Image (cartoon, rainbow, N blue to C red; front, side, top):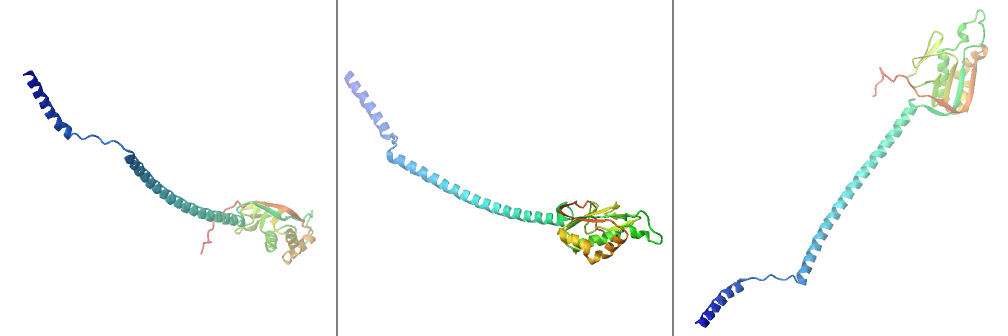
Length: 236
């Protein structure tokens, strides 16, 4: 009886175990072939990402080149504009300049007294004398002129008030020092020998008006510091 009972229990247990074993799915081991496929897939994905990054770098470099080229053009244009502005400032007298030229001094007569029946006006310098001097220098090629430290520009006026001369709204009195930049010999020759100066030079000899003209290698001419307000002039 014991033997038969043991056999029966064994058969029952065997019958229950076989279906469970048949329904189980064992895990597949990682082989060398499957590992190679994973590596190949990863390499392909990284190569695609690298290609995309290279394309982005190329696009960004192209945009950078365009920006740099545009900036270079703008800098070149700005540099040209600044040079033109600086040139116009120099021409218009807004900045001090220096160069070869002359320094000429003119003064009232050194005579101690005016003879009877003589016009005292012949013994002093007038605004028209100074205008003749300045115009003579311009005609001789002067590039910059100052009168007693006042820069002569396009809107400079000279007129007499009593025995003094008003220049750039500044009162000047003799002696009058004229500084002019240009070819020294040409400027000096114009003051001493041009037809425009003939009448003044003759009066200077007769009435003892001191005139001294010096040729210089480096003449300093200051900048214009007066008003630049235009009441009537407008751009076309």
